[in-house]
Length: 421
Image 1 (spheres, rainbow, N blue to C red):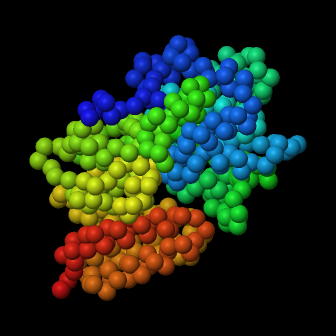
Image 2 (tube, one colour):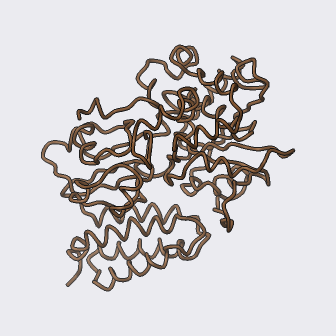
Image 3 (cartoon, rainbow, N blue to C red):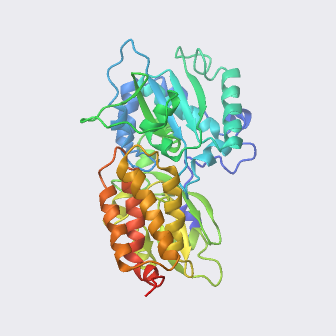
């Protein structure tokens, strides 16, 4: 299969069209075509269509979108909210910003569809604070949509359904990509993750029911509404149908963001779409889905497939699909130090195992790089990783454990080369 045959255009269909972010161009290229069909269906019918599509959350967790919508309580007098997670602070991840830049009206269309399904009339888009250019472009598209009557007191100037959208700019905290910390931030509090309930339920925004979905997840909904769930399930695998925006960074010839069906071989994506590594370089490792996913060696990459279940089977996770390519010659000790410095800085400090564990590992790796380390230090890193796993409010600490432990276990000889004896 050639690179062209591997690329699928659903979410990215309009990305290459000049001025695709402008409403006039967006309308000529299919935007808002799903709305008439949307309002010919009941909210429950829309939700069922999304359930049948097998649409999964594309923000890292991979949870099924339809069943998540069903966690919303029956409609009552309380306001209900859709919250679009566009924080995108995971190193190696830069896909949601493609939607903000090239097709913000697709996101607005997806917000209308998703809000109708869950009975929400207000959507907050939480966007990474550093994304100044993308925030301005998104706000311009929302303003166009209001002026054209696409959103506001009525949808598309004819459907009696109020739809208001507000962009909320984050303060630059990585932890606010976690959905409950994100909500705390919008509510005006410190971005600390909340304790999870014992059973499955929706999120709560100022005490009112809310659903949090990733930007790309929401942008995938209009195609499902317009063309039916079969248009989505014809791509991908049985358990991971559809497509995802996969990012590739590092010394490949064609770095960038590409929409692909789930289930492609990772090495084929790197070689055929990424063009392989730059001349003279050989593959050493790949962090497959953003910086918090367990690392894969070059040998494991040869056997890896880009879908959730396959990645779990090989001992890693698909995450956000942000592949970070690492060539031979790069020190894995330096990689570990670079990553742990980031996580040490970004831990919210609420949980002791995370707050102290990140700092402890950071100090130990610095000690090793300074030539003062020993085998005992490697054992300590692994012990701290085990202490961080599953003993905190959110998955930040377990994610740090995943990447650091995998580097130490798979590239321990590189750490040993720094030992003083």
